[in-house]
Image 1 (spheres, rainbow, N blue to C red):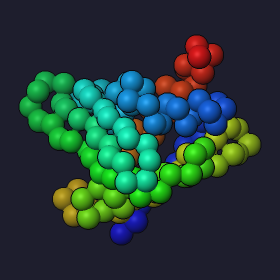
Image 2 (cartoon, rainbow, N blue to C red):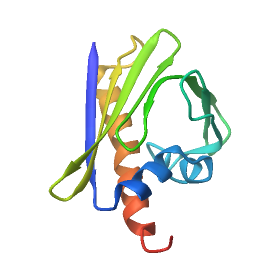
Image 3 (cartoon, rainbow, N blue to C red):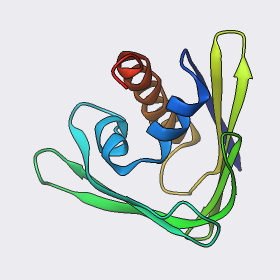
Length: 138
């Protein structure tokens, strides 16, 4: 099953793209809840390039690597990747209130669709808040 989440970011595409693809930014916004964080991120932003984000519970009780390979990069427009046997696409589309960031991904069988959608949406909402809060600092 495919799941879609999206948000609107009131910032220029250059800043949105940079924050989405820069490891130093990713470790700041890439979390679904306050009790988790991303401790390390790597990005090789090219088709065939690898990415990884180490996500851990802040109490140290668990963690995992969200990792995969980029399959398509269209700067400022689209990122596609595979992670395990799943796929995801991210679109960056100009909208009336900034850039709409839309993520479509394959679900997995362990968690409910609602849990997966909620977690990915929470991360995307954190991303939007991060970019908007930092857009004038560049």
